[in-house]
Image (cartoon, rainbow, N blue to C red; front, side, top):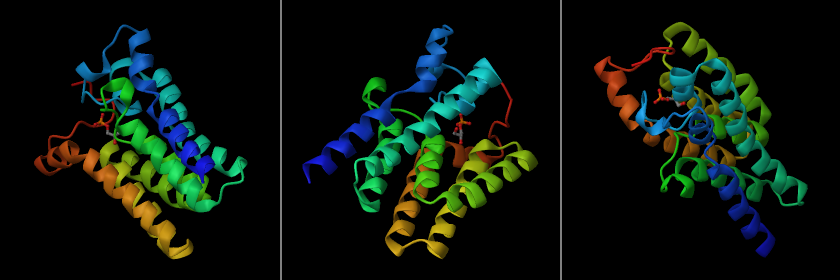
Length: 196
Ligand code: G3P
């Protein structure tokens, strides 16, 4: 329906709001030019500290959740809700405000997955993320393992098509982390809090 299409487009726009780049800019920092160069909460933490990073993480999580909840509020079904969450992640990763570049989609994917299937985000993704980052201080590794765990949980308890959606989101996240994956393999990936 037209309403569904418009809601997906609106979700893309919500997702494309580049919180990390804009918060950094208010502090006189070009987020694309510091640390990993990524427009995300991890890189904001690196260059601006915990407060701004938390703000960016919460905002980016909300973008995914609001896209899903907005569709639900309009009476659209779970498939359209999922499409809206995916659109928010795509907006975050390929933002018109950043020349169709953007972040890696970790926070927004978490918001989307948790809004669609709370157990996936709260009982699988979040614990795996904090455990991995706590043990290794590698945010990228924690993010990728958390997304994989969420996709696994969707395969266990969700409808099969939703598991496919989660797998697609995890694969997109892995693609966005291709540079991180190279560095993880080379043993040169930045640890949480490392400035370089
Ligand atoms: O927030 C995304 C995280 O998984 C990696 O970010 O800046 O270390 O490439 P970064």
